Length: 395
Image (cartoon, rainbow, N blue to C red):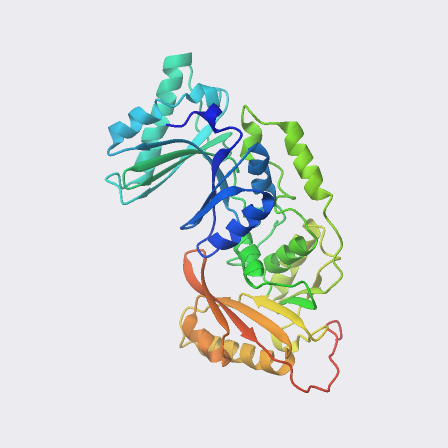
C-alpha cells in the first residue's frame, strides 16, 4: 500500500473519460506537462505533482474525473476488503466534521455488487474513526466534502481520492437543457477528434442546448474547461495549496482571448433556441456565437469553408418515415449548400445514417451516454460553384 507522503511530488494520478476519447485525453495531459502516460479503457494513467492535479481538473476538456490513488491491494472477499480499507489512516486524510461518500465499480470479482462494496468500505472508515477519535464522519450522497473511489478489477482493488467532486462534464455554464443534451466532455472530445483548424465557419445546425458551439467557443477562446465551476473537491483536502491553485487559475485565465471567425448555432425548435440562448448568456458567449432559429434546410453557409458538427435525432425505429427523410435531407443539404466544408455527425442510428447518401471518410466509435454511436466524417469537395453565398442572418 502506498504512503501518501511518498507520492509527492510525483503522484500517480488517474483521469477517467468517455470510451473513445482516451487518446485525446492523453494528448491533453501531455500538453499540460503530465509524464508516464498510459491509456486504458475509459481511463488514462499519468504522473504529476500537485500543480498537475490542479491543471488537469481546470484545463483538461475531455476528463470526467481526476483521481489520486492512495492504496492498491489484493482483495478476494468482503472481509479482506474491510480489513485492508481499515489499514489506511483515514483521520490523516479528512476530519470527523467533514462528510464523505464512497463510489464503487466492480469488474470480474467475486464481489459482484458495487453498492455492497461501498457499504463495507464506509463501515471500515467509520469504524476506524470511532476507534481512533471516538467520533465518526457522516455520509452525504448529494454534496460530500470527500469522495472515496473504489475500483475492483478481478482481485486488484484501487482506493482513490476523487479530486474533482462533481463530474468535470458539469462545466457550470448550463442552466437549462433540451431533451437528451450532449455531454460536455463528449462535445469537447468530438471537436478535438474533428481536427478543427479554427478556420472558416464552425456550424452546429441542430444545436439543442448549445453544448457543441459553447465548447467550440471555449476551445477557440482558450477559456478553461473549469472556468465556470465554483468548486472542486481537492479544495477540501488538508494539503490544499490555495496560493498554487489561484496562481494556476490566473495563469490560465490570462490566456483567454477573442476569436473572430463565425461560430454558428441553429435549431428549428423554438424551445431549443430559447434554452441555448439562456446557456450562451450564462456563459457570457451570447455575443461570440451567432444563434439562429432555423431548420437545417434554411441555413446558409457564411464563409464558404469550415466545419459542421452536429447530433441529429436518432429516432426510435428506422421504419419511422420522418427519421429516414431527416437523414436524406441532411445528405442533400450537405451536398448542395456546403461544398468546401467538412461535416461530422454523431449518431446512434447507424442504419439511418446510410440514408445520408454520402461516402464517409472516417468513422469513430463513441458512446453518447449508454448508446454506442458512430462519429462520422463527410468531406464535401468544392466544385465550380458561381453563386454567391447567402448570409445566415437574412430573413
